[in-house]
Image 1 (cartoon, rainbow, N blue to C red):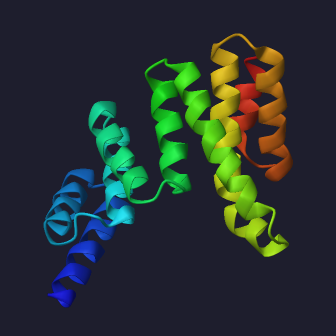
Image 2 (image 1 turned 120 degrees about the vertical axis):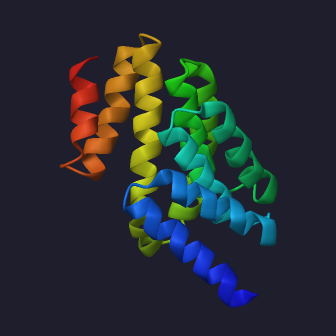
Amino acid sequence: MNHYKIKIFKNAVDYYNKGNYEKSLENYIEYLKIDSNNIIVNCNIGVIYIKNKDYKKAFIFLNKCLSIDKNYINSYINIGYCYNEIKQYNKSLEYSEKGLKILSKYIGINNENFKIYKNNLKKIYNNIGISHKKLKNYINGIIYFDKCIELDNFYIEAYNNKSTC
């Protein structure tokens, strides 16, 4: 049984990396029949639904992650992203700021944690910046896009977002 789980998971990841989200999704769904509480699989399914712009289904799997672990950062990042995509900017801010609060606890522990969580922090700042920009809070948007750029000088998305504030 364990080898089968590993095979299904590996197939799902391989299909995802090749851009075959439909086959990836099939494998992840098969995996959930064996282990429905795997947080990574639930999150990855949510991300596939985001890529397919099926935010309603994405919310189901991303919220399942939070029911498994209320501190799972990737769910907050992706839920914030979804809310921005469906133009519910205040909800995006709510989830992104919750994620930021949790992430701040992890980062504050030591410098090694900062290296691990830097990419997540960048995504949260970008989500928050987008929400502020869309709510016409341009100054706040610029502040958060600048935080992204401070973390990664090559984060083109933050430069593009900032330029439209």
